[in-house]
Image 1: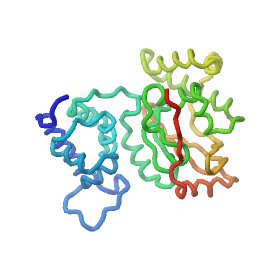
Image 2 (image 1 turned 180 degrees about the vertical axis):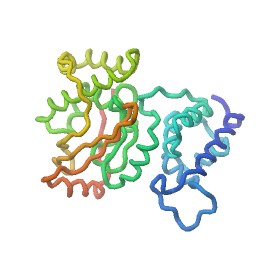
Image 3 (image 1 turned 60 degrees about the vertical axis):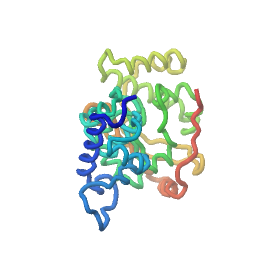
Image 4 (image 1 turned 120 degrees about the horizontal axis):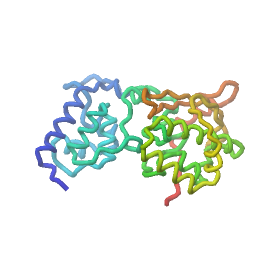
Length: 289
């Protein structure tokens, strides 16, 4: 592992400082505050947004300390609202491989991240076209569970839906057939939009065909339809059944979508969604493999 005293790591620290200086607190949902001696975010604010300790982030800006992990680089890129080119540059400065598109460390479209930051009381998350969750706000974690920390094929909710029965507890059993059909049609649409040689989507489809007879039967139907606006019933472990509208905003290339959830008209779900802030995040155990 290269030492943090190298010229490249010194440049990493300088790059982090320059990106931090250009971000206004309001850009990331923070109050401006009365006493700011320098423009941009404070070091401890970047650390908080990235889920790191203030001491560790200070070391990074000094070009010292341990080599940041790929997950930390992804978190810093999101906290600092880096462009895709800036994100890739940060990975290279840290001597980490630039991750392929579509995984949990994928670059989040800055515009979607800005919108997510402003949805403070509405459950919202950014996912890929293969249903890999990239980032969630606190209400979304409270509603759907924490999807961070999942790697490989299991990072995709579609993959877990067809391979891990516990993942289906999110929806009432009566709704499972409709959800399965919608997931498969959406996956076929996403696969068609990608390059024919895309190994990520081909690998997922092959794995699901081998692992799930239900998926294989639905795939053979050749239904194609992106999920855009859904009305869903969610079976929350603490609040019970609630009906919500799931709305989608797609990125220009279709690789990412911002999902947000609003109460369905004519139901008592508005009050239940308000209670999510009181309950905090739900405890969700993802079976190990």
